[in-house]
Amino acid sequence: MMIEVLGLKKKFKLTKDHKKNKQEFVDPREDADYFHSVRDVSFSCGKGEVLGLLGPNGAGKTTTLRMLSTALQPDAGNIVINGVDVIKSPLEARKKIGFLSGSTGLYGRLTAKENIEYFARLHGMSKLSVKNRCEELFDMLDMHSFVDKRAEHLSTGMKQKTNIARAVVHFPEVVVLDEPTTGLDIMTTQTVIKFIQGLKEQGTPVIFSTHHLDEIALLCERVTVINQGISCFNGTLSEFKQQGQSDTLNQAFLNLLQEPSHV
Ligand SMILES: Nc1ncnc2c1ncn2[C@@H]1O[C@H](COP(=O)(O)OP(=O)(O)OP(=O)(O)O)[C@@H](O)[C@H]1O
Image 1 (tube, rainbow, N blue to C red):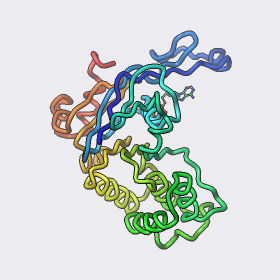
Image 2 (cartoon, rainbow, N blue to C red; image 1 turned 90 degrees about the vertical axis):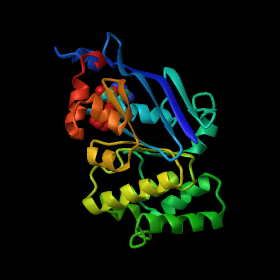
Image 3 (cartoon, rainbow, N blue to C red; image 1 turned 180 degrees about the vertical axis):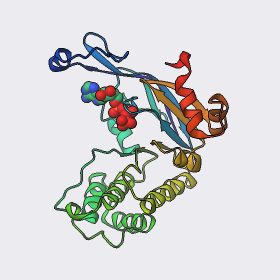
């Protein structure tokens, strides 16, 4: 099991409004007509590996992950999951990916359980396998106390657990999580971290973005740093510390962003 990403690029056309309001400070990614959100991003993640995606706000992490999930079409580059070309065969690829994004909404009128079941059925799972899978996920994510509550009445943490369960209900071969712990309390964060650990133990490659380096230290064998749309670092945690010239992950990260050749 393996996901490989090579030379991804994505630009967005600037709106007339945006051009009119142009400030003096212009991002180096902006030209007359386009904002080059992702300029050159490459990484890979194999069986039993967790890859952490780091980068300042606006670096292009979400745009990158949305391309992996087939929600956005890249302008250039390749994404291959276990031999399947995601760009050429998005429908086939979609079955192989479990994707969590900040913007995935739940149906407020449905319960947590109904939301998850609905997506499982869309993936073509049988009633029995949905039932078994839900029980397993409710155990792993500690969800039993609220599965029968309507989504609109759930707390942020409960909604996030429901979204995670929904993202992985169909046993995806690769799991992609965009900031899975942002906004969560310490207990819920712990549950999510344990859940990612569980996926890793099963051999499922996991790619997740975060701003928390302690999560990277706990979970990741590999780290990718994206800065201004370019993956400027790819490597193991010890290479991260070495190249960032610090044993403290935060400092190593800041140092890596300063490296002139990478900006
Ligand atoms: N649809 C769009 N149209 C125009 N610009 C966009 C669009 N989507 C993203 N961008 C721009 O691309 C850049 C990268 O955004 P992205 O959301 O990928 O960053 P990020 O690394 O996930 O940041 P954060 O850590 O803040 O979540 C931002 O400057 C954003 O404004």
